[in-house]
Image 1 (tube, rainbow, N blue to C red):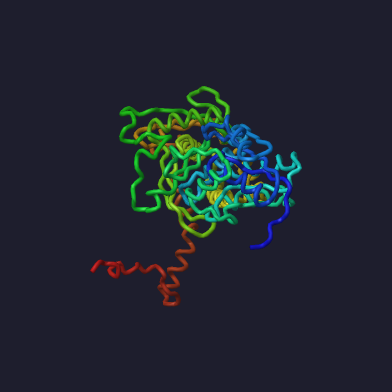
Image 2 (image 1 turned 90 degrees about the vertical axis):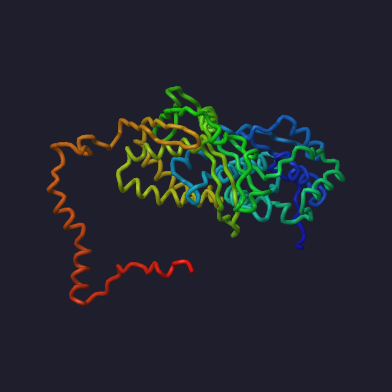
Length: 421
């Protein structure tokens, strides 16, 4: 192993869990440095008040605990949602866009404290190591990044508990979840344990934010969400700040079993993993905003935005938040969403979230054009010329085939080849 780079002071992204608690004395022991811990409150609803004392007992010289929920929703969640970004058609990116915010503040604290390194507790098999380190490279490449999971000999929870005991680290071994979880204001993820077999159905006791759809209320719930330029501002006519609005929708969606997702995803590091996600409020917001866009965006803009959404999702998932391209894509989205203002009515019922109404002062939908009844604004005979011109390439190709100069490429596959023995 290469010699460790000399560092004097490290800022550690600190959750207070077993792994990051062990990292504090490990850094001191292996790098001979001072350790400052940093914990971001992103709405994980875990006890944060005792972390500074726990960090001090573990060996840290200073500890930061900061409420970043408003910045999280305003500057990371909402831009991603407005872009329509969904990774691999399903994942609403709850963990992905939390990491660049944590990294951003960690770098700021390192600069404030005169630290020459930062550290994180992400493993060498996951996506988070990439997200943390790319953010640090983009914001302050002079900082050394230390990733203990890629260096130390700890390989199991039992190893970590033994290390903690030997170094006087306060840990609680009872009540440990069987699952690896990440929680913030936007979502709760579950990985590991029985989920490692993709054929195994998740156990109901695992879920924490959503009730089982079959146990949800027998009466549907209707909720109206108001958007201004693609940003949600009201729920059922009541104005809310970003944090309060997401919290309100989480409760509404969760109470009706909305927002569960079970998927196998492609990690950036090249392996597949299975994750089960609960994103009740986010599911409502994505569903509603898509419905409003169908009213307010013209066809070409809507279709091109779908292409941008896929790229945006990849960039967020891959940890490429602090890049010129993502900034440029935000500018595109901001321009496009200027008139995406209006109200969407959703119906929540036993796990489903259905759009049942939408309206906007900037709606491009015209009843007088769309009606199947008599109208004076659409001359149906005009469609004949349009079809002739639109289909002209098809006609030319067909004529070439008829004359024997072309080769038809429209043959149907032989489905008989796929018949079972």
